[in-house]
Length: 53
Image (cartoon, rainbow, N blue to C red):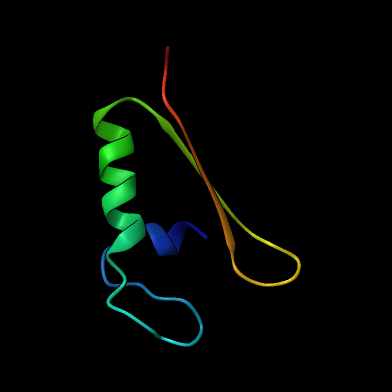
């Protein structure tokens, strides 16, 4: 999963350009938020961003 946070990294199918999670990670880092990414058992990803209060 950490690989998917880097620019131009895509999932198994290679769809898209692989910028989405890299952008989300940069925004989360800039706002001191935590980004959690994990594979769902049925396929796909679960992505959670928690901002500090």
